[in-house]
Length: 254
Image (cartoon, rainbow, N blue to C red; front, side):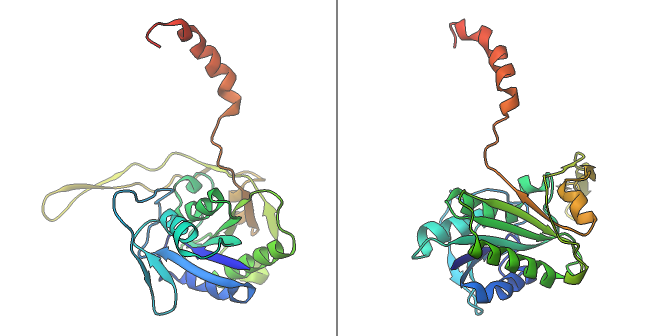
């Protein structure tokens, strides 16, 4: 089995090191990750400059670009054969609810999915980062499960693991994404040179975090597994928008 690993925390991140170690016995592991932390990069691709691919002393390869760049480059230009799976992580911090829109960890897995490769994004749901080994073991079990029984349809799984010892986990729940309140206001500051700068505000607290959501599962000590899809079409609004547009169809300027 050929497994491509990536992340958004950079090729030196302890979560990536743990992930590679946890999956080492399951197949041929290739690591292609960003050269530096690219958290929040979402699905951006670098189109205005060439990308450099280099190899670190530990064998990991790193790219001067985004998480999506890493997976796209690996699958379409570097690897001699398409990988059987892409696994992204282990992210330091949760990627739940609205976070998935911004997450570079999820984006790396999504890029694999877009290229026809089954993909998993895995995050340790705490910035304390005490139990990467727990998330690594969960990742290993999911990949092993895939080798025994692969899906017969394209799959993109978003996995969040409580930051606790493995034996303290209650199990795995299949969940939906929750929702957050809107983000905190941007933080305005002034540099020593008198320049006004801004920091993006913190994410808002969970708003939709009831039973069945990823927020609820992790809070209760469960591993959250959420299947994601790419289609952003709001099917429920199509009829309403059609009626809204209909009077304009006879307008000459259209």
